[in-house]
Image (cartoon, rainbow, N blue to C red; front, side, top):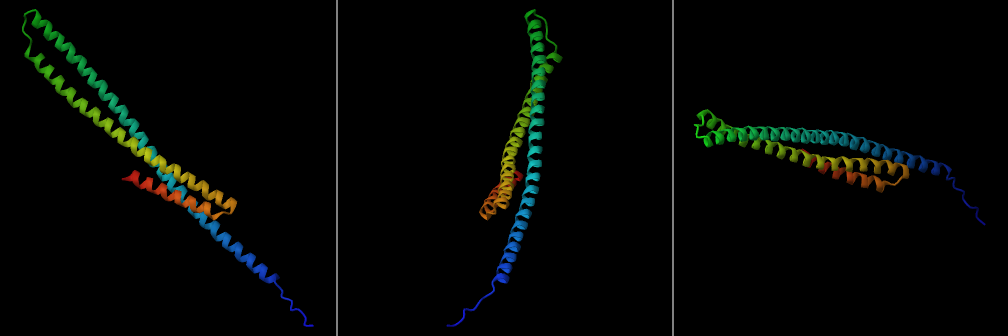
Amino acid sequence: MPEEIEIHTDKLHETIHEEAEKSAEKWILSVALTTALLAVLAAITSLLAGHHANQATIEMIQSADQWAYFQAKGIKAAVLQSKMELLDGLGRDVAAKDKEKAVEYSKEQKDIEEAAREKERSSTANLATYDVLARGVTLFQIAIAMSAISVLTRRKWLWYIGGVLGLAGMVFLIQGLF
């Protein structure tokens, strides 16, 4: 009866194990680099979102200031109009200076109103940009979390999902820039 040939597979198992570890290390390195890139993009997007939120707030405050100025001019115009009506009711002449001032107040109010509305429009636009960028930040943060979970659970498909979410975050970042 022929003797069975004994094959030593210890070395083969060791080599396979080493290669598997090297492959896992390369994958983990890829995940780490991807996560670092996502973190940078999240930071940039967050900074831009904060800028637009601040601009929206500042412009809304400036708009409110313009509306207060508009009201002040309206009060001055109303007081002047009352004065002119009172003088007219008493049969006295209204000074040309007062008539000119009333016209000036009316023109100033139109200019102030336009400036206030422009600040409101600009504030609204900045707020809309903030909303888009905030969505991008959220997607980047979820992508970072998915990448971390993929390493912990050793499931590459979670990393791929994180990559897709990161790309979606990029779409919002680009949309916010333009």
